[in-house]
Amino acid sequence: MSEYRLTIARSAQKSLAKLPNQIRDRILEQIDFLQTEPRPPGVRKLKGQKKSWRLRVGDYRVVYVVDDQIKQIDIVRIRHRQDVYNS
Image 1 (cartoon, rainbow, N blue to C red):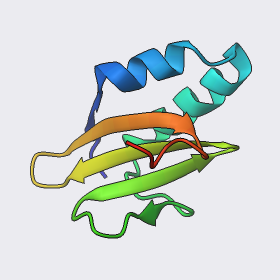
Image 2 (spheres, one colour):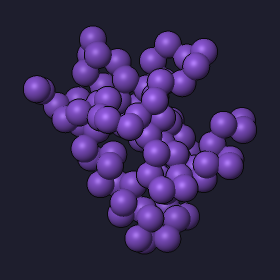
Image 3 (cartoon, rainbow, N blue to C red):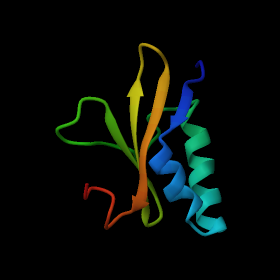
Image 4 (cartoon, rainbow, N blue to C red):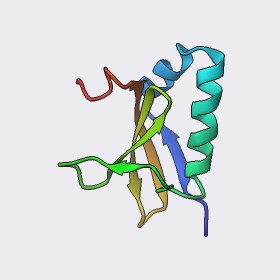
């Protein structure tokens, strides 16, 4: 399987930078895995969204969009599970 190109929104980068190192490392490890497997076991499609998916990493959620035609994954949001869907 070919690799997908990965982009991370600036707001997601800022959220990631504020997290403790241990949590940040776990999230980055999972994000790197998305490049080879954009829909690994355990991810869920977001209702009402055509291409948006949710990855669970402990108490944090990574919301991302997959475009299979151009083989790109856009990380849109990284937040605690209580805050991720508000905004």
